[in-house]
Image (cartoon, rainbow, N blue to C red; front, side):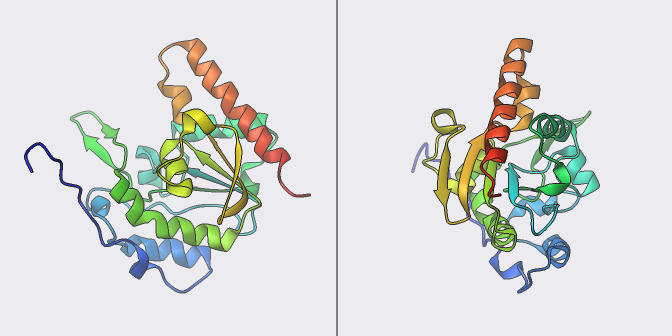
Amino acid sequence: MRGSVARKTFEGAERWIPPTRNIGELSRAIQKCRGCDLYHEATQAVFGEGSSRARMVLVGEQPGDQEDLQGQPFVGPAGAVLDRALAEAKIRRRQVFVTNAVKHFKFERTPKRRIHETPTSGEVQACRPWLFKELEIVRPDVLVCLGATASKAVLGPGFSLLKQRGEFVSSAYAPKVLATYHPSAALRAIEEADREKVYGLLVRDLRKAASAMHP
Protein backbone atom coordinates (compact mmCIF):
# COMPACT_ATOMS: atom_id res chain seq x y z
CA MET A 1 0.00 0.00 0.00
CA ARG A 2 1.35 3.42 -0.99
CA GLY A 3 2.53 5.49 1.95
CA SER A 4 2.44 2.58 4.39
CA VAL A 5 5.43 1.65 6.54
CA ALA A 6 6.28 -2.01 6.82
CA ARG A 7 6.69 -3.26 10.37
CA LYS A 8 9.46 -5.77 10.69
CA THR A 9 8.67 -8.87 12.67
CA PHE A 10 11.15 -10.99 14.58
CA GLU A 11 11.22 -14.56 15.79
CA GLY A 12 11.51 -13.54 19.43
CA ALA A 13 13.77 -14.72 22.21
CA GLU A 14 11.85 -17.72 23.57
CA ARG A 15 13.91 -20.50 22.05
CA TRP A 16 17.19 -19.06 23.32
CA ILE A 17 16.12 -19.03 26.97
CA PRO A 18 17.40 -22.11 28.81
CA PRO A 19 15.33 -23.91 31.48
CA THR A 20 17.24 -22.48 34.44
CA ARG A 21 16.59 -20.14 37.32
CA ASN A 22 20.23 -19.19 37.66
CA ILE A 23 20.88 -15.55 36.76
CA GLY A 24 24.50 -16.25 35.83
CA GLU A 25 23.52 -18.99 33.38
CA LEU A 26 20.93 -16.74 31.79
CA SER A 27 23.39 -13.85 31.42
CA ARG A 28 25.69 -16.19 29.51
CA ALA A 29 22.92 -17.73 27.42
CA ILE A 30 21.61 -14.36 26.27
CA GLN A 31 24.83 -13.73 24.35
CA LYS A 32 23.65 -16.29 21.81
CA CYS A 33 20.18 -14.78 21.40
CA ARG A 34 19.13 -14.02 17.85
CA GLY A 35 15.52 -13.13 18.59
CA CYS A 36 15.85 -9.78 16.77
CA ASP A 37 18.48 -8.04 14.65
CA LEU A 38 20.00 -5.74 17.29
CA TYR A 39 22.74 -8.25 18.11
CA HIS A 40 24.38 -7.53 14.73
CA GLU A 41 25.77 -4.13 15.75
CA ALA A 42 25.87 -4.33 19.55
CA THR A 43 29.04 -5.35 21.35
CA GLN A 44 27.18 -7.74 23.61
CA ALA A 45 23.85 -8.35 25.29
CA VAL A 46 23.46 -6.75 28.71
CA PHE A 47 21.50 -8.85 31.18
CA GLY A 48 20.08 -7.70 34.50
CA GLU A 49 22.25 -7.37 37.57
CA GLY A 50 21.58 -7.77 41.27
CA SER A 51 20.28 -10.26 43.78
CA SER A 52 17.75 -12.85 42.61
CA ARG A 53 16.05 -12.22 45.97
CA ALA A 54 15.74 -8.47 45.52
CA ARG A 55 12.42 -7.04 46.66
CA MET A 56 12.57 -4.25 44.09
CA VAL A 57 13.31 -4.45 40.36
CA LEU A 58 14.12 -1.40 38.23
CA VAL A 59 13.52 -1.73 34.48
CA GLY A 60 14.95 0.74 31.98
CA GLU A 61 14.73 0.93 28.22
CA GLN A 62 17.95 -0.54 26.81
CA PRO A 63 21.72 -0.48 27.41
CA GLY A 64 23.53 2.71 26.45
CA ASP A 65 27.00 3.13 24.98
CA GLN A 66 28.90 2.40 28.20
CA GLU A 67 26.59 -0.44 29.18
CA ASP A 68 27.16 -2.02 25.78
CA LEU A 69 30.93 -1.80 26.21
CA GLN A 70 31.08 -2.88 29.87
CA GLY A 71 28.31 -5.48 29.80
CA GLN A 72 26.49 -4.07 32.86
CA PRO A 73 23.22 -2.13 33.15
CA PHE A 74 23.17 1.54 34.20
CA VAL A 75 26.91 2.21 34.38
CA GLY A 76 26.92 5.25 32.07
CA PRO A 77 25.72 8.84 32.61
CA ALA A 78 22.10 7.79 33.21
CA GLY A 79 23.37 5.21 35.67
CA ALA A 80 25.15 7.93 37.63
CA VAL A 81 21.88 9.88 37.84
CA LEU A 82 20.06 6.73 38.97
CA ASP A 83 22.67 6.02 41.65
CA ARG A 84 22.27 9.55 43.02
CA ALA A 85 18.47 9.30 42.97
CA LEU A 86 18.53 5.91 44.70
CA ALA A 87 20.80 7.30 47.40
CA GLU A 88 18.45 10.23 48.00
CA ALA A 89 15.52 7.80 48.16
CA LYS A 90 17.41 5.72 50.76
CA ILE A 91 17.60 2.71 48.47
CA ARG A 92 20.85 0.76 48.24
CA ARG A 93 21.59 -0.23 44.68
CA ARG A 94 23.06 -3.55 45.72
CA GLN A 95 19.68 -4.44 47.23
CA VAL A 96 17.75 -4.01 43.97
CA PHE A 97 17.78 -5.86 40.65
CA VAL A 98 18.42 -3.55 37.70
CA THR A 99 17.71 -4.47 34.10
CA ASN A 100 16.32 -3.23 30.77
CA ALA A 101 13.37 -4.12 28.57
CA VAL A 102 15.71 -4.55 25.57
CA LYS A 103 19.08 -6.20 26.09
CA HIS A 104 21.08 -4.92 23.10
CA PHE A 105 22.14 -1.33 22.41
CA LYS A 106 20.33 0.21 19.44
CA PHE A 107 22.17 3.17 17.99
CA GLU A 108 23.07 5.27 14.98
CA ARG A 109 26.78 5.38 14.28
CA THR A 110 28.28 8.80 13.55
CA PRO A 111 31.92 9.76 12.90
CA LYS A 112 32.33 10.84 16.54
CA ARG A 113 30.05 8.63 18.59
CA ARG A 114 27.14 6.21 18.72
CA ILE A 115 23.78 7.93 19.19
CA HIS A 116 20.96 6.18 21.04
CA GLU A 117 17.91 5.15 19.04
CA THR A 118 14.61 4.13 20.63
CA PRO A 119 13.79 0.43 20.10
CA THR A 120 10.76 -0.33 17.97
CA SER A 121 7.73 -2.07 19.41
CA GLY A 122 8.77 -5.18 17.47
CA GLU A 123 12.21 -5.19 19.07
CA VAL A 124 10.70 -4.71 22.53
CA GLN A 125 8.25 -7.53 21.89
CA ALA A 126 11.00 -9.86 20.69
CA CYS A 127 13.14 -9.24 23.78
CA ARG A 128 10.41 -9.29 26.43
CA PRO A 129 10.76 -13.02 27.22
CA TRP A 130 14.16 -12.28 28.78
CA LEU A 131 12.63 -9.57 30.99
CA PHE A 132 9.74 -11.80 31.96
CA LYS A 133 12.18 -14.58 32.86
CA GLU A 134 14.06 -12.19 35.14
CA LEU A 135 10.83 -11.12 36.83
CA GLU A 136 9.71 -14.74 37.18
CA ILE A 137 12.93 -15.54 39.05
CA VAL A 138 13.22 -12.45 41.22
CA ARG A 139 9.48 -12.06 41.97
CA PRO A 140 9.81 -8.53 43.37
CA ASP A 141 7.38 -6.86 45.75
CA VAL A 142 7.74 -3.62 43.79
CA LEU A 143 8.57 -3.12 40.13
CA VAL A 144 9.67 0.33 38.94
CA CYS A 145 9.51 1.07 35.21
CA LEU A 146 11.93 3.81 34.17
CA GLY A 147 10.59 5.61 31.12
CA ALA A 148 7.89 5.02 28.51
CA THR A 149 9.50 2.06 26.73
CA ALA A 150 9.89 0.03 29.92
CA SER A 151 6.40 0.99 31.06
CA LYS A 152 4.78 -0.18 27.84
CA ALA A 153 6.88 -3.37 27.80
CA VAL A 154 5.51 -4.33 31.22
CA LEU A 155 2.05 -2.74 31.27
CA GLY A 156 1.10 -2.79 27.62
CA PRO A 157 0.99 -0.27 24.75
CA GLY A 158 -2.00 1.57 26.20
CA PHE A 159 -0.09 2.73 29.26
CA SER A 160 0.60 6.48 29.35
CA LEU A 161 3.59 7.62 31.37
CA LEU A 162 2.49 11.25 31.22
CA LYS A 163 -0.94 10.41 32.68
CA GLN A 164 -0.04 7.58 35.06
CA ARG A 165 3.45 8.39 36.31
CA GLY A 166 3.88 7.82 40.03
CA GLU A 167 0.70 5.75 40.40
CA PHE A 168 0.73 2.16 41.63
CA VAL A 169 -0.86 -0.43 39.39
CA SER A 170 -0.92 -4.20 39.73
CA SER A 171 0.31 -6.72 37.21
CA ALA A 172 1.20 -10.38 36.91
CA TYR A 173 4.86 -9.48 37.44
CA ALA A 174 4.67 -7.72 40.81
CA PRO A 175 2.01 -6.79 43.36
CA LYS A 176 2.85 -3.13 42.88
CA VAL A 177 4.17 -1.52 39.71
CA LEU A 178 5.08 2.14 39.42
CA ALA A 179 6.25 4.04 36.36
CA THR A 180 8.48 7.09 36.51
CA TYR A 181 10.93 9.02 34.40
CA HIS A 182 14.04 7.39 33.00
CA PRO A 183 17.16 8.97 34.57
CA SER A 184 18.28 10.05 31.10
CA ALA A 185 15.30 12.42 30.97
CA ALA A 186 17.02 14.52 33.64
CA LEU A 187 20.07 14.71 31.38
CA ARG A 188 18.23 15.54 28.15
CA ALA A 189 16.21 18.49 29.45
CA ILE A 190 17.65 21.72 28.05
CA GLU A 191 16.75 24.08 30.89
CA GLU A 192 18.26 23.54 34.33
CA ALA A 193 14.88 24.08 35.96
CA ASP A 194 13.41 21.29 33.85
CA ARG A 195 16.30 18.97 34.71
CA GLU A 196 15.80 19.64 38.41
CA LYS A 197 12.04 19.08 38.11
CA VAL A 198 12.40 15.73 36.36
CA TYR A 199 15.08 14.59 38.79
CA GLY A 200 12.98 15.64 41.77
CA LEU A 201 10.00 13.66 40.50
CA LEU A 202 12.21 10.63 39.91
CA VAL A 203 13.45 10.77 43.50
CA ARG A 204 9.93 11.25 44.83
CA ASP A 205 8.65 8.24 42.89
CA LEU A 206 11.54 6.09 44.07
CA ARG A 207 10.79 7.04 47.66
CA LYS A 208 7.17 6.05 47.11
CA ALA A 209 8.27 2.72 45.68
CA ALA A 210 10.61 2.11 48.61
CA SER A 211 7.85 2.80 51.13
CA ALA A 212 5.62 0.22 49.44
CA MET A 213 7.96 -2.72 49.89
CA HIS A 214 6.59 -5.32 52.27
CA PRO A 215 8.28 -5.36 55.70
